Image (cartoon, rainbow, N blue to C red; front, side):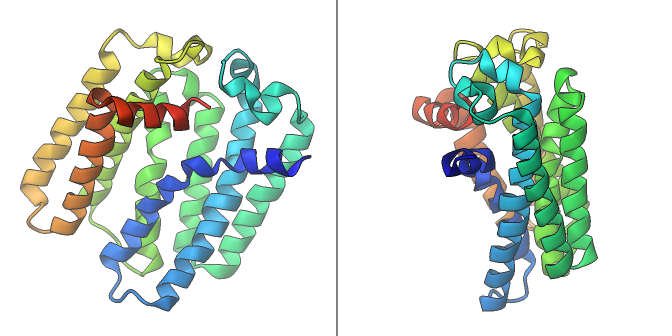
Length: 258
């Protein structure tokens, strides 16, 4: 397997999601020091690069036929035929196994439990939920509050349930946006689930999530102003901007449709 294909499986462009882990850790840490930075770097390597590199590889195997019909995704290693499914499966197994072992050796059991939860959510998504309307949104979104929880657990704290609920609402809104952005590119029909949503249904679902999120911010922001400031900025720039601001939408399209 060529180095470029191995790096393509890891999908570094998606690693912005690790910011949820960083936020969870920094918001609840008693002190931000070299030890915490070291822990976050190690966690990034084990969780995002290794574990998720393996997850993304298996996703490419499962999606290879649909990706081959997509103008951008057809260039992915498995869809293009450059890497065979067995070779990709061996690579994905090595990455996932290394991530789990590294997590077990370096972090507490509750952090490793988040590794396992993320793996389970992704397995459910890839093995069936991705083809079921609404379930695809739920399982695609559950990993985001899991990341935030993992960041808090890294510094031995448990975030309020309201924080996790808000993270889930934002993630669902972003999942709706992702499917709408994919409709901008010819070949979106390759993802079966998108066609199952009625026109404007995803937009309405996202708007509903953002409205509930706004209400929760009004109720609880005085108790956690830093957290809700981050959530508000993310919702405004990425979620709302993705619908109404062309440069933001173009940037998301470049990330999500390649």
